[in-house]
Image (cartoon, rainbow, N blue to C red; front, top):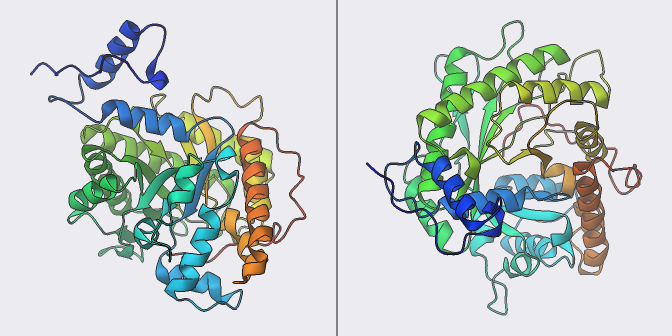
Length: 394
């Protein structure tokens, strides 16, 4: 079937490569072999993915479940109730100037629909700053039968209905976390890799069908004593399997983002590698597995300290690592919020200090995306404290 026209009369600036006619031809080339029907969201998906990948910006991952945020609150002596969760998320949303270095925010469903006491929406502050709203859509992990403690992620049932609802209230991208373990001496099983790739691809296709840019997140955990070369090998294999599955499901790669782990040695590895070594291993794995069509790679922090995550991101954006057609940026949760929570401590009088801390860490990571971070945030708050948790789940 011949695809229906794909552009309105005035293309979005993000698609322009010369004149409007060139932009239309490009979009037709992008979509014609993927879709056999009119794809009303194609332009918007591509524009959103590119906006999130803008230079000097990244994602604030504030999608902790009620249980996980309770663990964070416990560490600062704050009760886990709706009022405190709302106060903390509003602290983030109302931070003046947040949009300078934060292009998108991933939310838990409670936050996306939360109302403030005056009747306004909690997310209005993010919108005011031009921060694009995202939503966590997976339903957590469960043991994968027939494996040695490996996991699968659930949540595909009725995902189309949920995505439609999220789009209607303003969300424009989604996140789904899959977890992969490097088992000692053998790595991830073929079963686990196939399950991860297939489920992420189904999720991505459903999201795009409902207007949401899917963040594809195959996280290889830091658990174990494996060395850097082993982490690089399995990162490459897992990501390559994901893109094979994404193509099979007809996913528009130009309207997606990848959220992988940085290639790091296992938490129990006796050899500790430099940021330059991490960067070389990470970039090599990506060059061998990620298509040029993907606009942005938004790394998770994976249990690194705030400062280590920023330094490693900065190393990824230094000269000499070869061709990197994607924006290599951040989608940090713990590595953006640990010091923020420590500064806040649940007290109204600490809100300004906590917001200043958030802006500092956001600026540091924005500079790291440009390869220009100089270490100025190294001594602030809890920047040096590890956030690693074995078998991390949220």
